[in-house]
Image 1 (cartoon, rainbow, N blue to C red):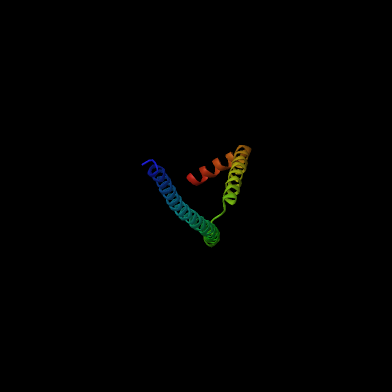
Image 2 (cartoon, one colour):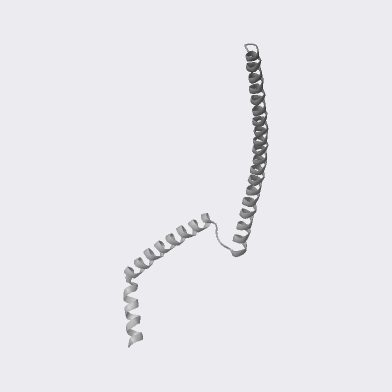
Length: 117
């Protein structure tokens, strides 16, 4: 019985090695599948990035074209128009105040009394 025991241990070891080899091959196949999936996902990501960039370019071009068609000013133009309008209003207000104080008040009062009565 002593001799069958080393053969049994050897058979168990060989069986264990075969099991480990089979498990390693399964893991290798799973790893290859995962690698292929990663490559495919990378390709999809690259395609989606290219599509996104194309869409951004098209959107920007359409936005600019629509702005031109409708005559809508750009942000910089809007800011410049706002500043220009503010300055025009300030200068006009100052001029009218100066004119009113420079004796036009008397002329307006005389005119309003003539019209009234």
